[in-house]
Amino acid sequence: MFNIVLVAPEIAPNTGTIGRLCVCTDAVLHLVEPLGFSLDESRVRRAGLDYWPWVHLHVHASWQAFLDAAGDARMAFLSTRGCRSIYEWPFADGDYLVFGNESRGLPPDFHDRYRGQMYAIPMPGRHARSHNLANAVSIVLYEGLRQRLGWPGGGRQPSPVPRPNAHSRLEPLPMPAAGPDAPEPQEPPE
Image (cartoon, rainbow, N blue to C red; front, side, top):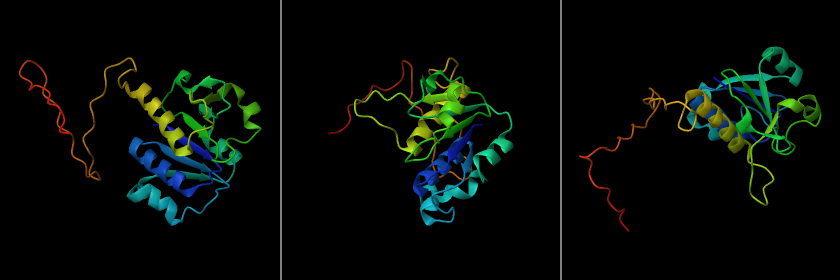
């Protein structure tokens, strides 16, 4: 399980979307105050849809309060100013993945204080400045899951796809037949 840490997030729908992502991946969400919105706002709940009651949420009054709660846990800090790619981080269960807010990123002193733990998401686009916060969390969290669960490209055989839980409305997709008796692929209709 991973821990997603948002330092002073400002945009309610981003936090709601990240909360939903945390429910879908069994990650814990940590919000470090000050928040730029109230957790009671309908925009947080709307973005999190009906997942919000299942978010494993911790709200910390300050960065120091968060550090006191986290103890000596491993942390990776994500910033466009990171010098190493997040794909170089060897993810481990229980890691804390720390993200700054939407307008300023991580507080300026973090770049000196946690220099050896700063990572970036590679952005090859010529005009790229930064990713949306919710997208950045998704990219990093799924890379951690890929490494930890051995999904394709992670060096181990993929884990079986879990069946939907009691809250899911989705049915598993049927697997295509393989082997000599499999039907020929058909062209999609125009």
